Length: 250
Image 1 (cartoon, rainbow, N blue to C red):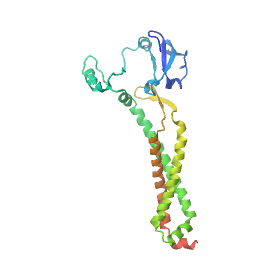
Image 2: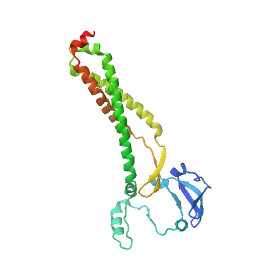
Image 3: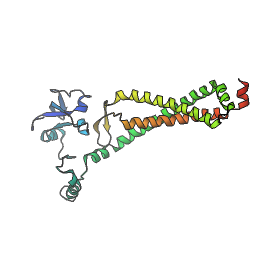
Image 4: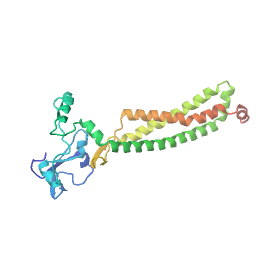
C-alpha cells in the first residue's frame, strides 16, 4: 500500500498487465511530479482494477484539481441503502447523487457498451448471413447428388413432407456440429483482458471476455436457427421435385 503523504501509487491488476511502467519500482509522471509504483492490487475484476490509486493530498495538486468527482464507500448494512440515499441527497450542503456501484458504472459505460453491442450484433448478422448461404449451398449440393434416392423414397410411399423433414433434420445436425466446434474455438479467449477508453468519463476501462454457459447456449440456439434457415429451401426443392423427371434419371 502507498504511504500517505508520499509520491507513491498502486496500480490496478488489469492495466498493470497492459501498460508500461506499471511494475513495482517503476515511475509515472503526473503533472510536474514523478510517482513511484509500490504495489499492484486486485478488486474481483471490477472497474477499480482499471485505476491508479494514491494519496489525494499529493495527487490533487499534481493535477491542479480540488474536490472529488466521486466518493466510494462500503456500507455495513446494504439493506439500508435507500434510507441513506434519501438522507444524503436531501442534504442541501452536499448536492450529491447516490448510486450503487453497479448502477454508477453501468451509467458511466452505457455509451461504450452500446457501441460494442451494436458492433457485435452487426458482425454477428453479417457472419450469420454468410453461414446461412453456406448451409444452403451445402444442402443444395446434397439434394442434387441424391436425386435418385429422394425419387426412390417418394415412389416407395414416403410423403414429400417426410422427405423435407429428413433433409431439414440433416441441416440442423450439421449446424449443431458447427456450433459445437465454434464453442470449442471460443473457449481459449475466456478470461483474456483488453481495455478501451470510456467515452463518458474519458478514462481507461479494462474488461475481460467471458465465455459463459449461457452465451454458449445462445450460440447453439443461433446455430440451430441458421441450420433451419439454410436447409429450408433446399429441402423444399427436394420435396417438390417432379417425380417423373427424377425417375427418368434412374
